[in-house]
Amino acid sequence: MKRVFHLVCSLAFLLVVNVGNAQQAPQLVDKVVAVIGGKIILQSEITQRIQEYMNDRVVDTTGIRCKVIEDLMYEKLLLIEAEKDSTIIITDVQIEQEFNRRMNYYLQQLGSKEAFEKWYGKTVEQYKEELKPDVRDLLMAQQMRGRVIDNLTVSPEDVRKYYEAIPKDSIPGVNAQEEIAEIVKMPAITAEEKQIAKQKCEDLRKEVLEGKDMAPLAVLYSDDPGSAPKGGKYMNVHRAEFVPEFEKVAFGMKDSEISQVFETQYGFHFIQCIHRHGELVDLRHILIVPIVSSEDMEKSKESLDTIKKYIQKDSITFSDAASRYSDDKATKYNGGLLTNPQTGTTRWDMSQLGELELSYTINMNPGDISDPELYNTPDAKKGYRIVLLKNRTKPHKANLKDDYQQIQGGALAKKQQKIIGDWINRKLREGVYVHIDKDYQNCGFQNHWLNP
Image (tube, rainbow, N blue to C red):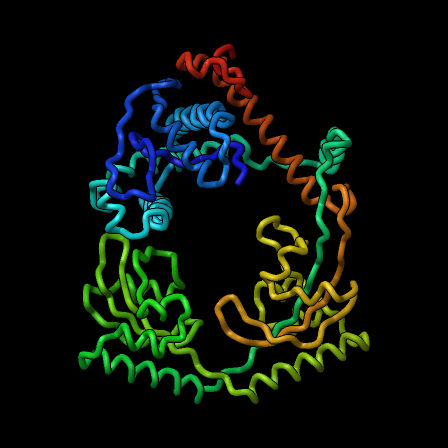
């Protein structure tokens, strides 16, 4: 992950997170390497930030240490200015959400809440109280950065000049890409099928209430592939990790309590609360998904066959058919086009097609519409879809005609960097005190921290 100005709050005295040895005590370092206004930067903060870069597979720590300290100085300057602005307000809800995000990251690295507490020497709740001021500072700095680059845009002329300024031998290459649109039909689930699934869930819950161990029941009967092999267990669940209906039940329970059967978009569930610790909960759960009949599946397929014929006869466009008939809310109002979350565009690198279960489009020509294909939705349901290969580009050097959105993103990033640099230098000229340790004074900083 490339980070221009990576706004992540560092632990104040943590030198190294050694995931492989959870029993190793953290080392404490108190060397101040920089002062911005009244804010200090510790050697430990720099070491922790370098560790984060290494987690992102950036291994040249020598090359990033100067960038890290400059990023931290920028963050401290943002915080100084944010504290002067009475309109920047951080709520407890925002702090809670950011803490949960960070806590989830550390639990993934260390493996469990117990391993985290053993390594850190404090409970999650104690850690949370200790981290609160740092999280508030982080969020204030983020809001201030938003003020600095608020409403910044680039014109087509800006994009053209940015592109033309790139040396010809430095213009990036673009892999072959496809634009793909879809129309999805999901089989209708009858009231009878729902009732059968609900009753099965109720029967399993009754067995647990009568004393049966829930873990083997989950292994045998739960339709949740994420937890069934683990006896239905989910550890260290935090808010916003599951759908709202599930979260409402999970966080409203006491230790050892067994919930009523409830419904979500996935099917019917019940939960056994193992242990609630602060804003985290350990639980077991069983999911029963209504079984869709083969006849209902076949009806979905036949419906798409009919829609495809209408499109091929020019009775309706693919885009209009998607908005009228598709069951996929994420694409139906966009002409059926799939949006790439990594780029924000409708283009997909050919290497990504396997993840989308769309490798077969390689054998299609632009304008072709596939036959109905079995489709697994993100929430593990089965349906059918037809796919239009709208466009395919060949591998090429980036150009304004075919790659405008990507080039526009680069132009905007460069403009943001200039605005940020101008803002930093202006604040420094206004007299913000800066001291940098001699070990870092030879860094080739982008901004004039020592001589504004």
